[in-house]
Image (cartoon, rainbow, N blue to C red):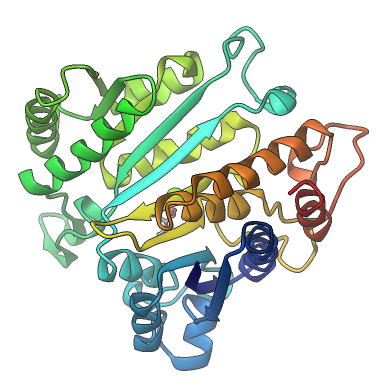
Length: 356
Ligand code: IPM
Ligand code: MG
C-alpha cells in the first residue's frame, strides 16, 4: 500500500526526532512492502519566522490532504513573548481543531528494563503499570471563551471551561471501547465537587457506561488522581478526562515511566486521519546537541500505523524493536543510569533500525 504522510517537524528537537522516525517508517515500509510518501510543512516558531503566522493555510491544507500527520514539537524561548494568538502553540491547537481531532490517546507503561529510572520506590511499582490516558482534545478551557476585562479589582483575565453532552459522550465512547480491548476498567477523572462542567461530565460518562456493562467505571477527583498515579499506578487501566486535566496528568504519568522522552500520542477524530506526536515539547535547551530521545516519536509513528493505517503487525514490529533496544541496554542520556554508555539521537535511531 501507499500512504501520504504530512511531516510537521516544528521547532527545537522536532526536526531530529521526526527525521529519526521517518527512517524507521521507511525501514518498516521496505520490510512489509509499503511506500510512504512524506511532505514537510511548517508550523510553530519556524512558521512564524518564515511566514509571520504559526499555522500557515498551506500547512492545514497539506495535512487535510494527507493520510496522516507526524509532528515533532513546537515552541521555544524565541517566540515566548509573542501575543497569545500568534504563539507557536497556537499551531498545535489549530491543527487539532481544524482536523477535528477530539481524542488524544496517551499510553504510559513501565518498561521492565527501565524500572530503575522510575522515580517511585520499587515496591510501589512492583506490579509495573500499563495505562492509557484518553484525553479530550478539542474542548474545555483550551477552546473556551477568554479575554481581558475590567474586574472588581481592576484589570483581569479569564478563560472558561465549557463541555457539551455531545463532546463528553463521544470521548466516553472512545474510552469504553478502548477498555474493551484492554482490562475493562475506566477511571473517569473530574472535579465534580467544585465544577459544573465536571458534574455534567460525570453524569454523561455514567450514562454512556450503561452501554458497556462489561467495563467497570469509577470516578476519581483530579487531585486524588494526581496522588494515586504516584501511590499505586497499577490500579489504572483507561483514564478518561478533560483537555486540561489530561494535559497535566499525562506529564505526570510520563515521568513515572522514567522519562518524558518515551511517551507517544495519537490524536484522532471520526475518520482515519490522525496526528501523531511525542507528548514532550521542543526541548530547546538540547536542540542540536544530539541528546534528544527519539523513542516517543518513533512510537508515535507506530501508533500511526496501527490507528490510521490499520497495520497492527507493522506497528508491533516497531514497538518490539524499541523494547529490544531497551532490553539490550541502549540508552539516550535521559534514560541512562550512572555508568551506562550513552547513545545520541541518531545512535538510538540506528539501534532501533538494527532491530527491525
Ligand atoms: C501537549 C502540550 C500542548 C497542550 C501545548 C504545547 C499546547 O503540552 O500536547 O500536552 O497543552 O496540549
Ligand atoms: Mg502537555
